[in-house]
Image (cartoon, rainbow, N blue to C red; front, side, top):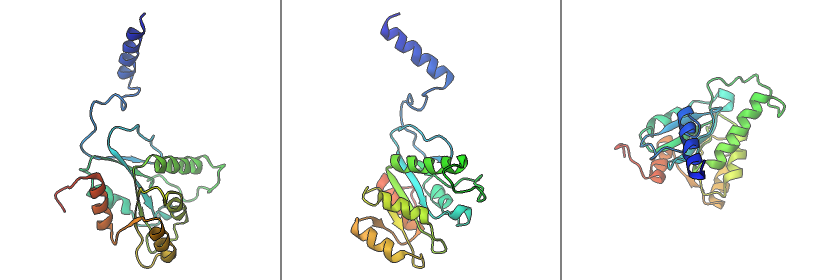
Length: 190
């Protein structure tokens, strides 16, 4: 069998059984797709990938991620949401705990592949993991940050944001508007 025939047969078989179908899509989708941990992270498909980082507090913080998801559902983006419905706060936060490791590795990889990192640090939270993630990506140019008055380390966050020229906004609506501006999309609500 010639190399070209082999490649065509391989592509046909892979397409038939669903392997690599994301990479074979002809054009990017025009609306958002939400990928929630621990779902597999998607291959690049031409749409920007937006990580919804910030306060979760083991599920105790308000689900602000759903506000963002609803507001930009018509934008051509892939939303990477670390908040999982099946999270068990009783899981030991240990590298030896497979579910905990799976979550942390998902978040680290999602942050790395994200084109935009949305970060909301809620006043009623400590959010040490989010602070670490902010520090890891402060110099990336990818972060849009909302840290309202009342967050326990707001001064540190504001100075760090100023030092690294991180885009800061003053509300959840500001986060939504900033994401829309970076994506170049409007839902008509602007």
